[in-house]
View (cartoon, rainbow, N blue to C red):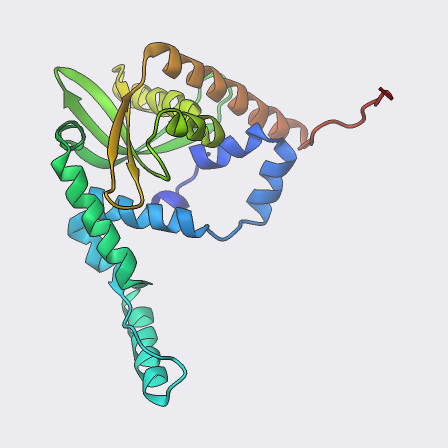
Length: 252
C-alpha cells in the first residue's frame, strides 16, 4: 500500500490546522492540485533518494510541435505509452536539473554522508494521549559522527542566511522535526537527532546542512501536540471552526 493510502494523519495534513481547522477540513474535502514547485520537489526527492526506481515512475517527454500533424501523432503515442505503463511525463529541462542537483548533493561531503542510510522509511503509531493514528515518511535514517539522525531533504529558492529559516516558519519544518522524532521514537524507543539538507533549485544548486538543536525539536514537538489535540477535539465535537465565531472591532 502506498504511503498516501495508508490510514493515519500525516504531517502535511496536520499542519493545515495551524491556519484554522476549517481550512484543514476544506482542504481534506477539496484537495488541491500540487503546485509546480511541489511537483519539482517530488522529482528531486525521487532522483536523490530513490534513483534506482526513478525510471519506473517517470519518463522524459519528447519535444514536439503539437500544432503539426506529426507532432500530434508523436505526442498521442507518447501519452498512450505513459498511460499503459503508469509513467509520469517530465520535461527534459527538469530531468537535467535534478540530475545536476543529485551530482551537487554527492559532491557535498556532509550531505552525502547524512544521506548514507535507510531511505523512505514509513512509521505509524497510535498517539497515547488522543488515540489518533499518525504516520510519517522519513527521507533518511542514518548515523553521523556516532549519533543517529533523522534527515530530511528540502528544495528551496535560497540557502542564504535567514531565507531557509523563514521557510521553516512558513511551512512548519520545526513542527515536522518534532512530529517525525516522536514517530521514530514510538517505533524504535530511540531518540534521534534531526537534520535538514536544503538545496537551491537553480544552478549551481548550492547545498546547506542544518542540524537542529534540542530546543528547536522540542518546540516542534509542542506544536505537534497542540495541533494533534485540536484535530482530535474537532473530530470529537464535529466543530471545525475558523478564525472565531464573532469578534468586536473598536474604532480607533
